[in-house]
Amino acid sequence: MEKISEGQQMHDLMKELFPITRSITGEGVRQTLRILKEIHPELEIKSVKSGERCFDWIVPKEWKIDDAYLLEVETGRKVIDFKRSNLHVVNYSVGVDKTLTFEELKNHLHYREDLPDAIPYVTSYYNPYWGFCLTYNQYKELDRNKTYRAVIKARHFDGELNYGELVIKGKSSKEIFFSTYICHPSLANDNLSGPVLATYLAKWIKENLKDRNFTYRFVFIPETIGAICYLSRNLKHLKENVVAGFVLTCVGDEGSFSYLPSRYGNTLADKVALNLLNYDPLVGGNYKKYSYLDRGSDERQYCAPGVDLPVCLIMKSKFGEYKEYHTSLDNLDFVTPKGLQESFDLYRKVIEVLEHNKVYKTTVICEPQMGRRGLYHKISHRGRKGFVKLLMDFLAYADGTNDLIDIANILKVSAHSLIEVADLLKRHNLIEEV
Ligand code: ZN
Image (tube, rainbow, N blue to C red; front, side):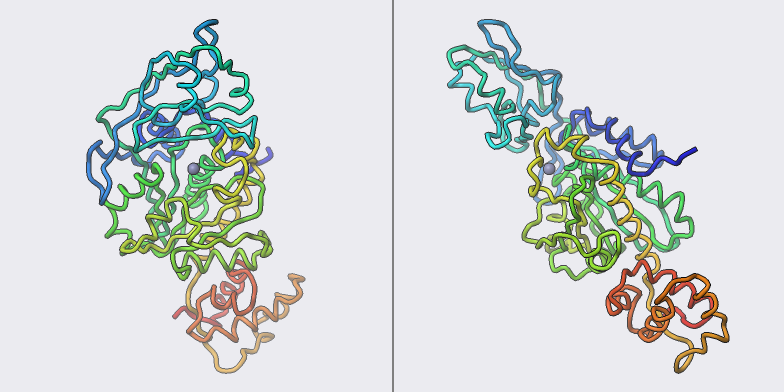
């Protein structure tokens, strides 16, 4: 039986999650978490009550929407119907049932003239407002002389904010941290690509990294408010234990990779990301480098002064930088199994490099006699030209001051390709961990 690729499996999961109406709070978030919990039964679904204080923020009320539509009163025709796309309603809209002239209605309509077939994704979380989103083509067809009845059956009430937390224990209490968000409705790259990648990375760690050193922490939170809530409850633990972390978003399209650094770009997360982006054959140095000034997702919280977690982002097309972003065009066609697989393969390498990123020191003075150990034979048998040179170059810098990534950077190779070299040298007692 042919193995179904992780990319395909992630895309299938995305298909299941895609229709759910998510927001920063409410049933859509819980439904999403319950589906992820079917794959990871140990995923804990947590809740924080509306009104609770998290640093400078107050947890907002829960939002429930049952239906929404815009009627042309004269004909009774539904010109916009939430049932056709959950993007048709401004996310977190207040409820309304009102008859209006076109002039009055106009202020509540959102469209993109530059993308006439796209429904834009608009939110109004912290300012009570109602509105509809529609394509520019739909907008042009509205009759300016008719009256309209706007109906949004939505309400806000004291409830809870939910998030998911999955911890996969390793030998060490030191952690690798992955954060992704689950607050966007039917949108694929930003943001369902993040939760599906997190889900399948966690699955891969459990199934293939049994001898892991690090503990792995995955959080599935509503963007911004969820990150702030999570940090307000876990800051001390995270600061003491997280050695590298990543915000997973925009990881599913077929564009080139992008990198957005931590605040100063000098953490272990940045170091491993840059080595692989620069030298690993998966990327071949073909990526876009952004600045922390271009930040936009939860790195804003994780890298804030006083938080200072070692968190950066490796994305495909960065949020805000592709035309489909925050519109109905960011869909299951824009995100592909191939795009998801590329991100999965790169993050898998990130994890493997971090697991092997030790400081090594040679155990012999001067160059070791490789022939006596059968290493030349082994190497030539493998038919890999340049491997001896790689081995000798590795030894030349295994002086007890460089970790695996440092050596890889000096040699201008992917740190992932040195894992095998380090393992071989270790087996022959030619290096030891410092
Ligand atoms: Zn977004």
